[in-house]
Length: 274
Image (cartoon, rainbow, N blue to C red):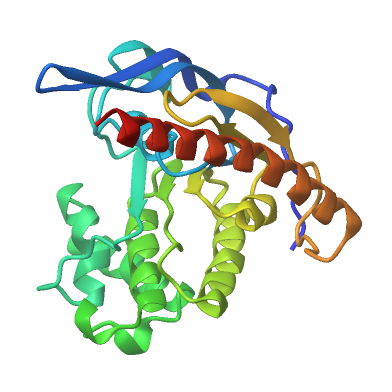
């Protein structure tokens, strides 16, 4: 597969995150999840958001999706302020989020029915996606009858059915075995190139972020801020045994470990005060 990494900075951003803060409040207590996040994402970019647990990766993705709006700051997607979820931003979760009472084909068709596409157009779109994801023989099965990898393929196919310009992916391969994960990483890269989507992908895997991303956004432990944005300007496919890969992996590992150690110290301090 050939693709050119996008350095970020060409044209008008498809997503503009400007000084975004997110504070959660409950029982007279507040937690600052995100602080002063500023990031531009461009059409066709593959962005990975990387960091330890508790750094606000999913909170930031949910803000872009419109599920959990910022406490302050500005968030623009596709030239509109994000105020709610929308069909221009398709979400793929780690938990697959399939309807268990629907077949594979019905799950993929669900979004198209909401868009009130004609039955003929819906059937044609679903058939094409079933074939592309090698799911044709499983179209009448229910999610409980599928492997984890197959269920995630259905979830991605359902997101692509909407033809959204943007895919938001929250650790979509985190629960899969290594072989299935590698296969779906390759499949996702093919989709990215073929459909020219903008992808924002949350992961805790350093290797995965280097394999996939144009840019890796490394986040600090709570409150989540951007520690560093690391460009990965190497063509796909990427060789994990190459010196450049090893060097970049070491750089990212050091940054993430610094934040992991901060999180462990914070947890230890919190327990000692109880």
